[in-house]
Length: 61
Image (cartoon, rainbow, N blue to C red; front, side):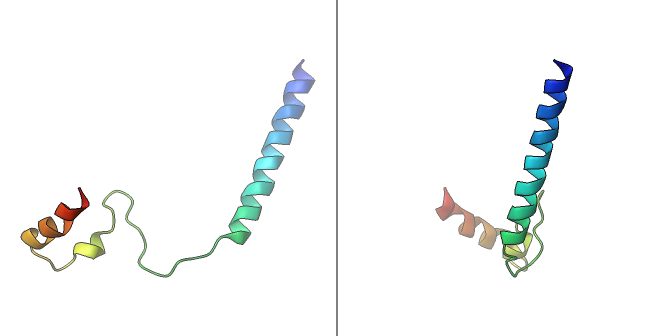
């Protein structure tokens, strides 16, 4: 029972490694600013006053 569990675990880890490595090779880097995960894309609103930000967000709802 333990051997089956261990073999299954090893196979799953190897498959994840192979697919992760393959997807990293196939991915394309998009040019642009580094994303800010907690704040979103802050650069989109840089230099705007609060009313400009609000008017830009209202059509999104």
